[in-house]
Amino acid sequence: MRLKDAGLTPQELKDMVNKYMVETYERYDFIAERAEGMYLYDEEGNAYLDFYGGVAVNSPGNRNEKVVAAIKDQVDDIMHTFNYPYTVPQALLAKKICDTIGMDKIFYQNSGTEANECMIKMARKYGIDHYGPERYHIITAKNGFHGRTYGALSATGQPDNAIQVGFKPVLPGFTYAEYNNLEDFASKVTENTIAIMIEPVQGEGGVHPATQEFIEGLRKLCDDNDMLLLFDEVQTGWGRTGAPMAYMGYGVKPDAVTMAKAMGGGMPIGACCATNKVASEFTAGTHGSTYGGHAVACAAALASVSEILDKDLSKNAKEVGEYMVQEMAKLPHVVEARGRGLLVGCEYDLPIAVEVKHEVFARKALITAIGDKVNRMIPPLIVTKEQVDELMGIMKEAIEAAVAKME
Ligand SMILES: Cc1ncc(COP(=O)(O)O)c(C=O)c1O
Image 1 (tube, rainbow, N blue to C red):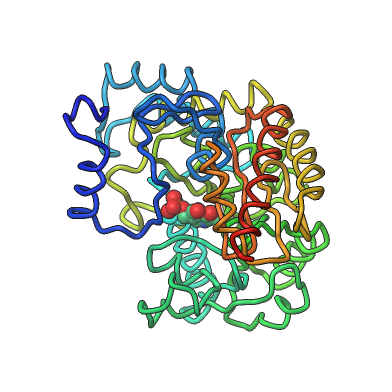
Image 2: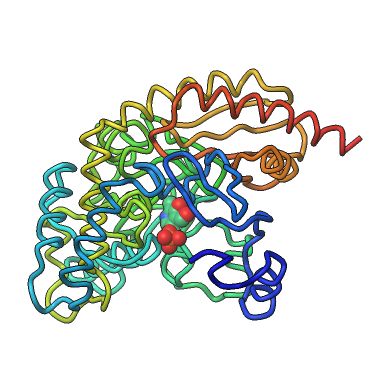
């Protein structure tokens, strides 16, 4: 649906949003009407180079043609059934995902936060069923992010952030330890701890990849203490970090993992995958979702996941991501460029990240800011080195403009 079809001016549209919508987002001042590959287009047809990918969602490219075709095909047959009849898209997607990532079972949800609720519930039930009613505690990482529903926001180790402030008390049973600090995690384990849950790369927390030793150490800590290792791969999953799932790049398998974002290639879907040991906790009546496993979302996800695998977009993510980190380190005021694959961030010596984001936008490219010192780039995984060069040119000017404004 486009502005001219609605018979509105840009200002009328913005006024309508302000009047009728609860606004929790700081919007870019443009109307996104169309998207294709690496670009979004506004109502005047201006192109914006997309380095935020709908927040790490549009990994096979904006409106990837196979994803679009799968959606159209599925809509012509059946859209929604709830989960009583069998459907072909659910079954094909389940097999594709489980076979690819070495998990036994999948449970479909509609978003990342819901996928995490599912994983947290599975782990708590596993603990309570196997060890008694007190063993439901989960250690998560400080500065992590797991979503906005109550379980997920309670798992999010940021008690002083707007994510939690005003919503206390959070769900009991979560303890926070310092990311990449194995000793801190080990010191928080008690007889009631059933699981450790982390992101393999902290995305919303400022782009911090886990070290190899940390991931391996957590696996051993869990094995030694009969605990489950849970990975939140909502942002890192499906090619983003240079492997189909980030854990496959680390060579360390969790007991359960969540995914969303890139999985649907632009359609809302999430999932929790687990080994039989954990997945068997869920039996009839223990969990459910009206829309989870929606036929159109599953058909889109099958196309998205297949595109990412068939085109080996993980490989592109690794190569272009490494190039981007290398080039970003040369930008003025950057004290650290870091990332894994195409989950990339740069940290400045000045609090300019939000202004840089706006200056980049003024030059028709899209990036995100995390706090006031970090910009994050999470483009579609089809991005080329030439497009990275283009962004680096834009960012250099944007940084200089942002610094000039501070003076
Ligand atoms: C690691 C991680 N987990 C969970 C979520 C929540 O996902 P959703 O917004 O789909 O609920 C996000 C969203 O950014 C995320 O990055």
